[in-house]
Length: 361
Image 1 (cartoon, helix red, strand yellow):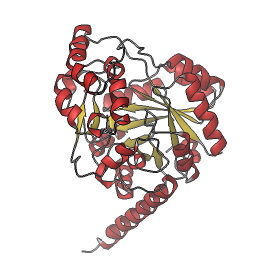
Image 2: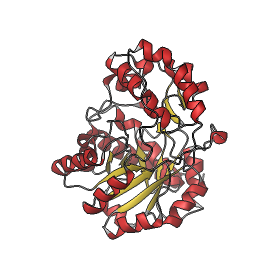
Image 3: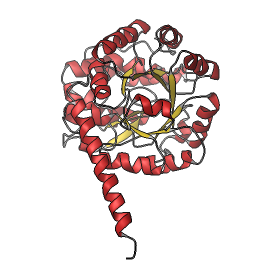
């Protein structure tokens, strides 16, 4: 990894920014204090809400941290398909006694306003999801002293990230929980994602910038595997979701290891974009019919998801989780970083011993 990034966080552990109230300042502070890189999720927040989170985080740690932004989405949704899906959700609306949201509630997530805040009040790292910013945006952040990372799900996307001038690429495997950070939402590619280790190897031969590996990582031994494949660090989301500092709903945390939820699946049911979550009733009933329409479907189902959480009904919530969710540990975030680092060291030591012992066999 470049010395600039290495100097920011001594351990190769990045806490993934999980939008929707999960990646709160307390979580980011605990991770950064332990030697990893904590992240705030600005997605679905106002620019002022993001600024207040940054202020709170700065009050809790002097260590470096990052802020994640969602890229504005092009308008490509089939309006009639969104209307049909709204009719299909009428039963949910009645059941939870809440109206569906307005699908036209905005598609840029306050991107320009958030960028303005981050240029006026620079943070150490800014990452981007759902697309790649222009070179002008990345250059302006660089001039402000901010390092930049962009999510990619293919080698081609990673190449675009390098061409745009980002400092690092977050390589997201199909195992990852939450939304796939594809640069273009193409329904024809649903289900064709690449596993993390294969993707890291592909990207390593495509770009020269540092790689942050993301997707299904829950143990230090998996971090070691990602580093061996060519990554400079690993980004973990689901692993931190179960920590006490996480802002996730208690039902969400419990569901990670609840035997009722045996598998994950990519679905458009809750947001209109492919996202991996624990299979539940809502996903089974509506996933097959959900249109490719983000953020329209996200706005449409927002009130339903909140009502389900308020009612204590995990079967109606978006239980985002990666494929390794059953390995979740309810440890304080700082302690989890320490455990992961110890597991990483143990895996590296074991590998060195095996390599040394293999001579002359």
